Length: 230
Image (cartoon, rainbow, N blue to C red; front, side, top):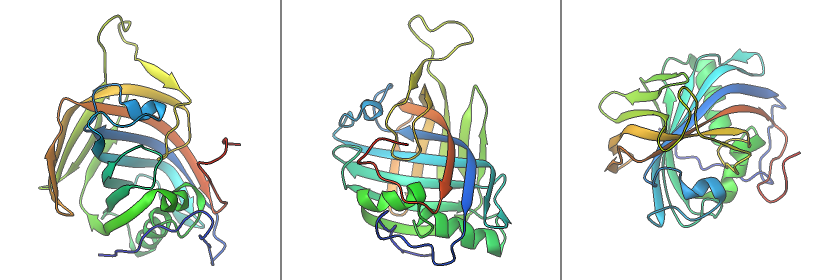
């Protein structure tokens, strides 16, 4: 286990000068009411948020190290606004990664390679750790799923109620998301959101909020939440 905290965007240095690029799908399962006020920069429903956040890398690389098909999962808690410095979290990383991929994934998520993960340092008060664990992660238009045996049971999907057309979804465009850059966000509901003994955290927030957004992230350039995305 590593307990290295993410560095801020201004502090981060990629000493190896390695370019990275990851493309895929991100979703969360959280304690907020469906629709999640955090989507609009408002405070979470309960005044705090507890959630499971997943990045499924469809294609990606860290220098010449391929990252296709790997996943990272975040176990998160914060009190107050989604854009404040209040985050407490730990990372669960895909144990299918070989040694080079493990180094790449840990370097990325701890902010050492710059980009959007380095900007998390501006929002973080405590990092619980980084662990490589077996996991099953999948996403399609109807289901986004994450399972870590004995630790995490997560299943979300589009929320369809009150006039959402058949076979369509409720979407928000350019919602301010600190986990990924803005894009089309699908409003969802968590069928399952159960965490058992992960970094000392336990909850069952099933039947509450979920959301999905595709991501296209790269580095090592700096990134800030304090100015519009260019």
